[in-house]
Image (tube, rainbow, N blue to C red; front, side, top):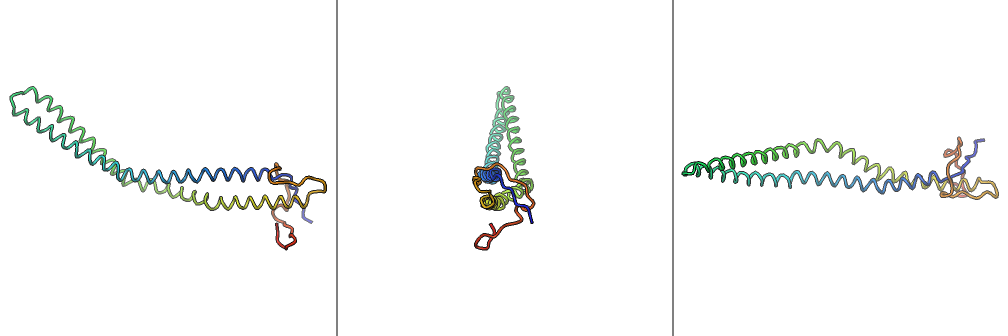
Amino acid sequence: MPQKAHVTSLDALESFRSKLIVYLSQARPALDEVSAEVVRTRMWLENDQRVHWENQIRRRSKEMEQAQQALFSARLGVLQQATAAEQMAVHRAKEALGEADLKLRTLKRWDREFEGRVQPLVKQMEKLHMVLSTDMVKAVAYLTETIKTLAAYAERSSPAGAPPLTPTTASGLGESEGLGERREPNAGGGAH
């Protein structure tokens, strides 16, 4: 005859179930936020930054043209001392334009590489999100049913005069070979 399970406590299962629910309530929104941040970063690269640096190149090109025109005018004029200031202005404008051009090229490179670098991580995150949304929800439901089943089993097999166990008043489970394997049929013929 198989040994009976000695269920002495259900608190450990109930505590784990409660902590799993809290974890799921925090993990799923965190993953949603990360997904939204990936989309925002993509849009920032494709739209905001590209427009910004393209505008900077146009503005700085105009400034360089103006500085070159001022230098040319100063060279034609009689004030030879003014050309040093204009030469410095042209030099600064060229540097600023070069910086904007470098930023735009870097931005375009990141825009091309973004998908390849981010997509493998996004796929892993989507898998985790799926596990949290489906498998872990099923796990919570399974734990709930297991706790109910063990509580009913403990009530039926508890000695007379012993207080019945409830899912929130216990602290552990006894060991048994038959725990979880052998279920006694109830009056309706099903297992519980």
